[in-house]
Length: 525
Image 1 (cartoon, rainbow, N blue to C red):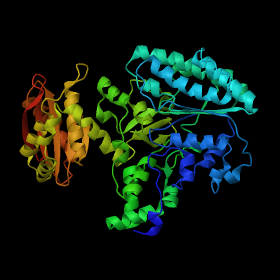
Image 2 (image 1 turned 90 degrees about the vertical axis):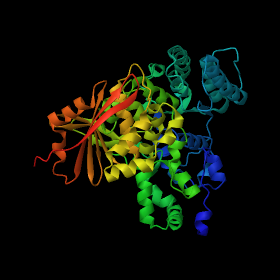
Image 3 (image 1 turned 60 degrees about the horizontal axis):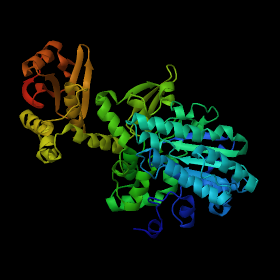
């Protein structure tokens, strides 16, 4: 462990730019992006949780408060000589759980009271939007400077209640009136930046605003949050060296592990590779590669969407979507792709300029493993049943070709799986198998297309190919007949691997795998 590395202080859980700079914590210089914001006035930025949005707003606040000493040695210090302080109204909606109308009004009132204490002329008997309008005007009149408005997680009240239509309507009404001041008080405003997870263009609280620029998909701002490959080498070089020393690996091997686990995010057509900043900082602070971002929590609204819509997991990756649809979709869509992108579980992997479409996929191993692991409990009747499933036995059986052994383990794992009445039992069973096999680290294809149909599930190992056909309330014989009739094995006939055909039947009455047949593929070549 070298002295240079041990002296680095990583800002775990610190979102205050002032605290980071005064405490000599590591800071990845993003101030050049702040300079780019000076060319406009009203902005919206969407990024996944824990991607640095709060720190970005805190940095912007420090600049507009004229705290130039905090920027010594950073890009912005040499890019501008205008450090005149402005009044800053910083609204953070991320710190409260919103359970009723009163909780939102209480949060708005708490901020309004602080601003009114600072700038005077309080109007406690007025509605929140009237008080906001008044404080913008009085802040300008008191200081002679236009007001800076920063809103952190503007959409938290809405996405916290995505299945409570009545409460969402109330929140929309309150927030629409509140944010309308961004237009009506324009003459008193210097700049405004709102951040969140959801697109704003489809949310009715912004329906009256046409002056906000969404920079979420703009190349110029693609690296405004997160860590680029260049920044990784610049700011984390000693951390990489320390981790390599601990693991007994080369620095290039560690870089490859970091890339596989935390890289892969793209937020525009020509976006650079972006690493998850939360996972990187925790990795170097703990000197250990781990799934930090996913372990920090999953948005509850995403859980509710998965349960409500009964999404077919095989349709999620890779996914192709029209660029306009992705860039304009709100969080309330029933299409799973936009919310999964907005929350960071999918990211842009390719862009087709001819058809104007994006191809989306998991960004990296951390997200892929974490997302599927998170879904496991929804396909197991009781948590205690997990101990009956031995990963070691399962993998050993798959690799050795012991079909009966891994089918027994599979049956014990998914016995009694619940599914909603809205969802398809076959799709639910298929999703369960997909999750389990994928988590085992195997090459998995679900609903795999052939020239004459779609295979329900294909599992490929170095020596074997397993082809599954699942039936519901039918029989294993019917499933096997379909495999034989459509000759699903032909696409693997030249693989040089042993091909096992498995017809299985699932009962909706018992919610169990009730029977299966195993055959070896005919030698037709």
